Every structure is written in C-alpha cells, then in structure tokens.
Length: 132
Ligand SMILES: [Zn+2]
Image (cartoon, rainbow, N blue to C red; front, side, top):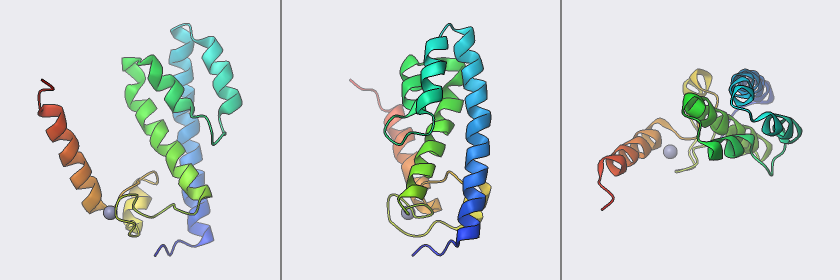
C-alpha cells in the first residue's frame, strides 16, 4: 500500500507542477518558432484539463527537438492524473508502492524499479527487432 502522507504528496505535486511549467515554457517557445501559435493558445486553455493532454497534441506534431521534453511532460501529466485518482506512488504494472527515494529523484515515476527495468528491456528489444 501507499503510505505517502499529505505533506509528501503536496511536495511531489509542487515539484511536478514546477517541472511541468518549465517544460511547457520550453515547448511553447519552440512551437511558436515553428509557427504553431494557435496550438500554444489552445494548450493554454486545456493545460490543466484531465480529458485532453497537451503533450498528446504536441506529440502528434512530432517535432524532434522537443520530443524528449514532450515525453517528460506526458509523464508528468500522467503522474498528476494519478495523484487525483489516488493512484500516485503506486507502480502501474505491479501495484506495489514505488520506493520513496525513487519518487524523490523523479516524482513522475510510474513504475517501481523492477517493473521499470522490465519495461525498458522490453522496449529496447522491440526497437531492435526489425518489423518485417
Ligand atoms: Zn512494479
């Protein structure tokens, strides 16, 4: 079970939101340079909406220079969603509590260390396998 208390949750949420703001400023700057002002405005409106993800919309554009930021922003959005649903701090794969040290190092972590390693292994294997 998760034994994060309110103070810890608030601290992680503050960290996530701060990081989200920073990433979003970076991404918005690039979007403006690329001529996507309309998306920047739109995203400002749905910024804190649970239904629509800014990161999803931006990811669709597939702008290489910000792909890492977009991926991290997506992780943060998901973490904030889990926080609302009380699933925050629990591994999305095995359901165990995520180590507090791990959350402190990266508040957006969605998996415990074991599952994260498994997840990354699976992914790199899949990436290396030719699709045909
Ligand atoms: Zn796990």
